[in-house]
Image 1 (cartoon, rainbow, N blue to C red):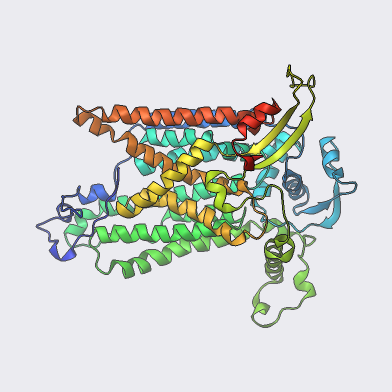
Image 2 (tube, rainbow, N blue to C red):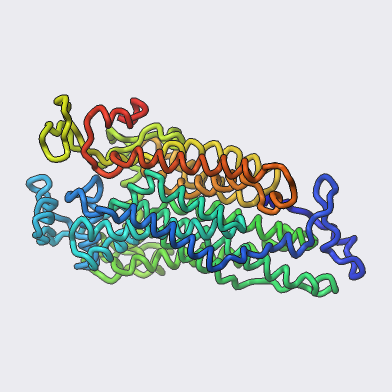
Length: 553
């Protein structure tokens, strides 16, 4: 249900005329009571909501864990992250591994020989949270393909669960929340990234977790304001909320997202502004004069401390392993380079860590990377329409008669893992985001702000780095917000349940048919692309049938 923000004139509000009777929309129509506009009750189907949530999450888990250990090889950049994770697990910091002859370390590990590390520390060009998460799976199940893919599959599955619950909270509809979960579960890109040991699936999880906490905080704070309405109509001041537990949790999640990949900083900044706008809107709604400045002081400063400062502390804590090991890469920088000026007050360990970050930044922005090319690099302008997906693994020219290749016309086969999003979901989601931008502005529907802000902050910053190889799989952080936008639009097509009870027109029936048909088509589209997502052996012609554009090949 769309939310309309109203500004209540404090001069007209008196104890004899309660504020909740005064709000009107731009057409002059009377709005619902103030308490209801501040906080709408959650659906009452608590048990049913959780049963549906867990059922869809179980479906997502079955898809992601099925045959997870295959192919028995290092896929794409697993060769770096799986080994770095194991080095962290066994040594506490990253070590270089043997590299002569080429691929020697990979072959040794797949053969069961884990003695592949040198005594030389390694510069790793991403923070350590994602690699520690991969290491947890290796600790549980061993240094093998299932072990290093276990945690990506687990956290990819948990992202589905989180998305169901946050969309349910935003829409007050278990049905719309479940639709969101199904759509994310059958997205091809999210599916593939949940089955390989790369970092981006963890980044997506921690970002969704952080936004879920901020949406929960919006409910928590507005419910407290709603409970204070009666006191405020009597001329008393409502309770200001300086300590907000959900925002502290969001700060921790943003810190862990930053500890996975630095690109999370843009999302944190965007949602920091959005959270401030939510607080400002609430204060205007209850009739606070000079709401902007009061909200900046009372809400903005504590929010900065709760989100940004907590995120920085959390991020720093994720480097504990590096800080505790003197042999880690660049740990001795401070001892070799005496401090000058204000840097003298910075402890040597942290000064060395700062220099380490400078080296990582130089790697990502230096001439070396800018001059590099890759056959699968993809410009971010094409990500919303899947202009250039990425192939993670391929075996070409499998001859007829070899395992899985049973062609009768002598046609060769191949097997691939292509990180391609489910096309109907991505294309429908792109349209939904455009509609969401309009609805956010025109109807002031805050829920579309969540989708648009998340999508933009996960996407637009990459345009600044289009002079270096970047890849479509980075867009896995965008798809949860795409699904949010799409679910909200589908909810509007479906229409409110109570409207179906109040009218004789088949509004709800038609909406249900449209929404149901779209979800089924997305599921079928995912099923059609399944073989190229899971390394299945296919005749060459069957593979070409799934490569809908030349740029996909």
